[in-house]
Image (cartoon, rainbow over all chains, first blue to last red; front, side, top):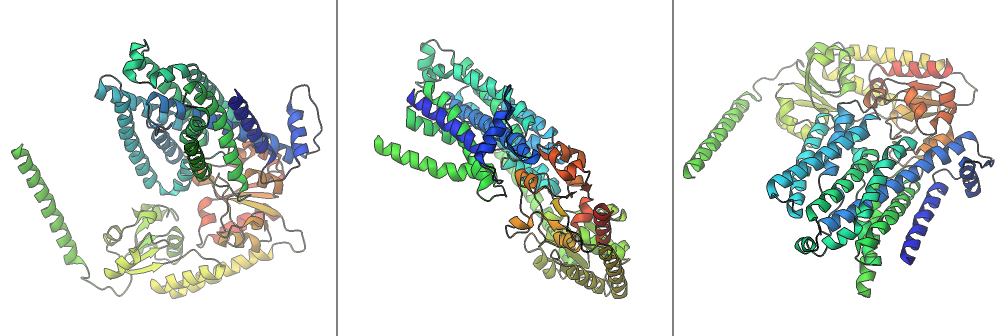
Length: 333
Length: 289
């Protein structure tokens, strides 16, 4: 309970940090007044001119919210994948989501002339196709959809889609920078449109995964043991994988490939709050949201007013941070 | 099982033999003739393709890179991939002059080994660099006089354009967009230098990261509120002034509300050929009416 409150505080602190800090310095009081002014029934004059107000409300706010939604979705999906496959290295991109989305986005950018609205749709479609293919392939190979065959099928599908993506990219070298910037992940061009696109998928994913968190605990003792306890492991796996993949696909579609969140956040949570999925998943939602928002603050302020790709920051900040957590918790144990 | 193996061995052998035969053929042709006049040119640089046509040797171009699309005749030539050229692909056209603006690694050395004359041009920093390249190209294809005339014409046109820039007014500020991720140029770059000549002040100069091509944040552009926005990502990335107006927060920019978002032709804006004059005219007309 205490941990949950701490995670909530971290998440809210990150949101606050996210709207207060940016390449343009605006006084915190003005920012808060501007935000208060946007609440229904509240009218405060922040004294900001039209453009500064737009910075707060049209750029920072949606960017923080999008970062939070993407971080929460990726972290909870990563945690769920790790549980359902009983594999600590599982991440949200395990079943080919990233490669599929990458191919979809690359096709949209090269063939579709990169009309901005098309990229998320194509990336989402590519991700879903890749996961479906993985599932079908895994089923065909394994008969029973055991975790291992699914993971192997995911490797094969990801390799195939990545190869196809690289091929298309090389054939269209004039758009290579655009593709590359998508691959590195981006929240920089985010607006309310992306928030609205992602929100329903994120909500469904988080809700479904949270309601299945007890079953993940049962699964973690072993597949056969879970079956004897009356759990339909095949069905649970299908639901969890479907929900996690759906959310990941939607997150990737609006923000590109942001690595590391789905692996480092659930593990950090696990090291700090124990190994039960009943606490790991909700804490991953909050921790993932907070982590990505903070990473994005670093991304847009470290070299301000230039931007560092968010995927670079998550790995660069997340790697050492995770090492520290690993060390301190190791000492405790 | 054994017969399968034998079959594979046979196939493999055939492939090796055929491959060996091919390379033999090529070996026999290489270095057979030395042509005094340049007759077959491969240009893997769009700017230099434009210059070659302007020098009147367009019909000698046998292949260009995929970005060479001007003049229209350049599109009819065979194509190579400028970012992915291989010595063999270039040599296959049997050229006596290859022009590159980028060497992905040892291509120049490889072509020299084959005895093919190669010119590798770096992107220019100043107008003088451009004229030097035109001169050098003219010498290489035996059109020295035409090159001098072209340079003279460009100099005349450019000084006329610069002469029309009003003096004593406060320099209008501008943001130059290379792509929708807000990559831009500073005045230290070639194209930025052109804008400086036309009396414009670049909002990215304050944040140069040493590359000359920094990426800006949306917030920064809104804060600086430039007088003009020049889009050089119309063709590459399908941007337009309408789309710029719809970006989060950008509707509040004076350049957007005042209709001062200028759509440039990406190709003209990113090349350093005879059409530099077109770029400069477009910009001055948009800014000073």
